[in-house]
Amino acid sequence: MIKMAAKKTSMFTLTERLTLAANSTNVFATVDLGSYVDVGDRQALQIHSVDFIYQGTNASEVMQVTFAGDSESKIQVTDLNRGDFVFANDRCLIASGQLNFDTGTNQLSNEADIYPDNFGKGADDGRFVVNDQLYLVGKTTGLDAAKALNITARINCSIVTLGAKDFMAIAIQSTAADN
Image 1 (cartoon, one colour):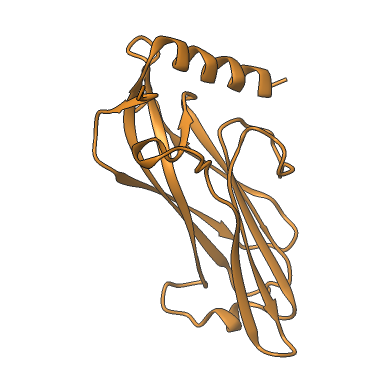
Image 2: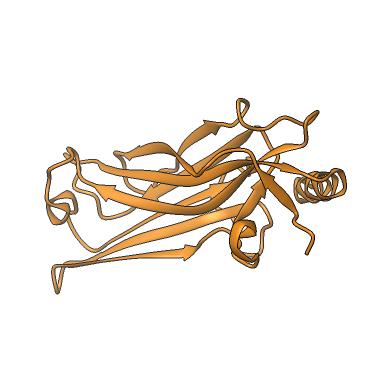
């Protein structure tokens, strides 16, 4: 069996937090991957999973008091900067999630719409990234004007070395997705 990637590290976690303090306003952040990706050595980042943690204005606040009414909060992680949310068929989309609050039932529901590719077997599970940054965008509605919603993305990944053909194919696909 031919392996697509050879692991250089065990799994580790990168985190980035978005603070949403205004309704219907996109908030952006980046995760610098320059220390993990190396074109000369065909070194890539393999993203195994992305989890989203939703918290209120402070870490101990009950989420329901963060919202003034029915709410939808969403977040996406991409490997290209689109400047806005993307559709699910966009190849740069790595992970997506949302949190909904229903005032009628006082219930929160949280779901991850898309996780990284998981079509591999065992060590090959995950999404290979050869770009030097990840991009996050988040937005919420129904937020209490005196509150903020914090969304933390926990990105579980490892560093891998790809074969020359595999690295080139991923780089070409990423460049093609940029158009």
